[in-house]
Length: 108
Image (cartoon, rainbow, N blue to C red):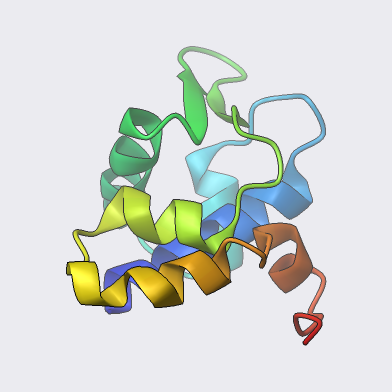
């Protein structure tokens, strides 16, 4: 559960910080208070799920590949959920991480 919460928080912060240029892991680490190595583990899973892409070198970091991903997208990317959890994920399809990064509650 800790990884799921950290991953959603990470994508929400990346979504807030992203303006077309790569966002460094160091700047995300500073915002999330999570270690760079832990964030790299999260980003590895997010890359495999095509939510983010990475850019190496000077000015490197992460780009959002999937604009405005849902909370369900992130949860599916970072964990294996049982089939019985699918109704919850279907409900979370309607909650974009951008909404969380703005501090808003989802509309009923």
